[in-house]
Length: 146
Image 1: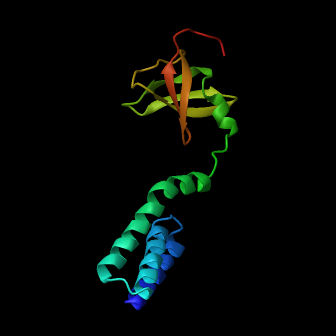
Image 2: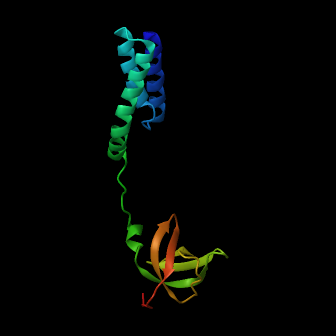
Image 3: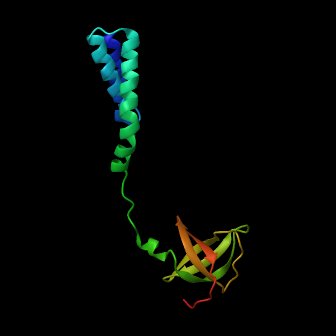
């Protein structure tokens, strides 16, 4: 039975090595526990219980912590500084017609309305979000010169 546990450790480690997503490492660790139990002469049922228990005990508390540590930190860009700015709409923003444009820092951006309202040319809008090369805007409550 020890060979089966050794094979499971190898398979789970191989899968983990190919994915780098911390998907099966927990089961590889559990399989090591099953292997140790098999070498110690435990019954098959006990080996399985030990393997599952170790997998769960390592998975639940550690996965969140490890993923938090491995998660790349978001790097702010110059575009992030646009959020909250007020701009003048150069082309009427209409999500249904897929129209809308405005200039920010001399560059023309595609605009979409956050709440699907139409924002007429010449009105002001607040930049709420950036999705790719599109600024998500909302009609500004107060007209301001930009």
